[in-house]
Image (tube, helix red, strand yellow):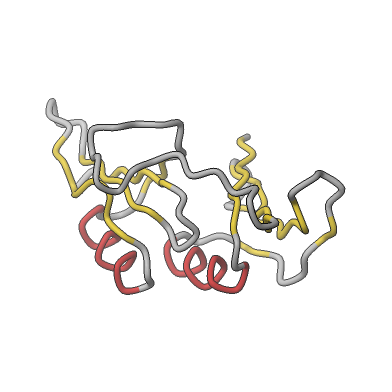
Length: 130
């Protein structure tokens, strides 16, 4: 099982974005949180193996860990299996996200990889066989 914390500034925008990209069940109600810098949590799950929450952050507490202009730079980020990287990146763009790394062949018949920046400025990786 995996727990994924996604910091967000605008919860409505984040839910609208992620609910279209991944098949997650997202709670419509937030839960107050006592951690400094975190206003509330909106829990989600992706079946039995992925659980997490959108952390609604106070101003000044959301850390950016990427550069949209530096595709070779890398930071810790989650990666998810999708049906098709190219189609997913197109949907990301339509929903207000940005492509950080276009669909790339991994070689050795290992599939394809890409990265995007979500509407909350987080970097997310995606992988597909095709």
